[in-house]
Amino acid sequence: MVSGKYNFCIEQGSKFTRYIKWNKTDGVGHNLTGKAVSFTIKNAPGETAIVKWTTSDYITVNSAGLIKIDVPAAIVNALSFATSTYQLEITNEAVLLEGLVILNRKLS
Image (cartoon, rainbow, N blue to C red; front, top):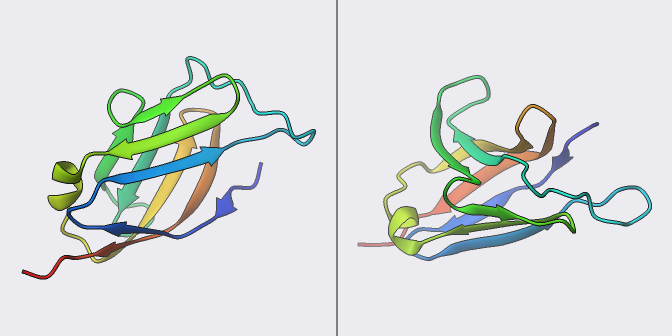
């Protein structure tokens, strides 16, 4: 499977919530119940993760193929990169999305 390309923008100090739907070719969502999903941010591909959100903390999934990333503002406020790369993946199965993640830093 070829991963999709998409760039995200995160507003520092604000809650970061995104919904991603993973459908089969017939339009029906994949059953993601019990799947481990992660959103990993790195300075560059192949480097160590600077942020990793998972189904153990800020990601939920359901049987209709919906992935919800829901990160509280306090966590987003602590981010300090400018532009990095990310991957959204189902652990040991597939990279669903990848691209850039841009942090719009709040002015102090």
